[in-house]
Image 1 (tube, rainbow, N blue to C red):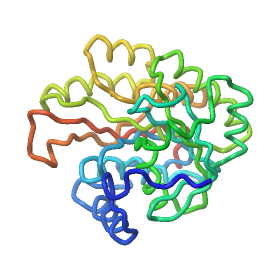
Image 2 (image 1 turned 180 degrees about the vertical axis):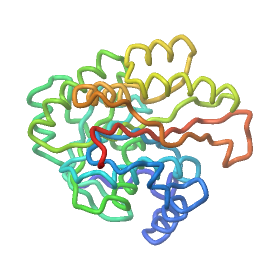
Image 3 (image 1 turned 60 degrees about the vertical axis):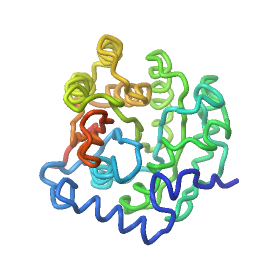
Image 4 (image 1 turned 90 degrees about the vertical axis):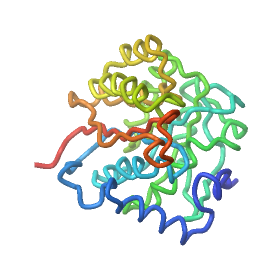
Length: 284
């Protein structure tokens, strides 16, 4: 079974040439990461990245930072993409039952053995096509992977409806076990503050980002509750944080932060976007 694009022509162009040109434009613009390898560092190995999932014209530059940094790291077998379930349809942690995911840039294989490992070892995970059918948070990451990664890869798409810390830590445990049989990298798909004045969004998001960089998972959730920060994918971020802590003492690194107002010119109600990377080791 092939999971066809749900938001091509809406969140990103539906034509291959137009999509490639847009990603290249985002990558090469003044705020993009092209030519800024010294700022990124040269990752020998990373646990994963945090990437936004809005329309490409709004958050695509930020996403480029995440996926370019991933492309500089050593190759992996499988990219685990964890996105929030915006529609509330399906199981609370839903794994795609498709064999392939399709975008205008072609088809990407799903790691069916990894899927089977998760659903057979962890009752938390369920095969569920309904949760993935119209959800964009995983889909919009895939064209960036296809554009930036210089090697063949598989994906493991996961959509999370239960954003609690308990679920995040359970996902992290599963990732730790999966990493014993697969070389994986995690893409945690999330936007940050939603529809706040830019000044307030930047302050709130900076507090959350400080916790993420420092790998403080419990404090991350406390800050979200205390300051009422409308981060839509905290469980994926926290799962990546905890997974990374099991692998490396290095902190995360904020690569780039922006918000929708810098594109629309409307600073009264913005959505925040952040790119982060979690390096395990850096080339000397």
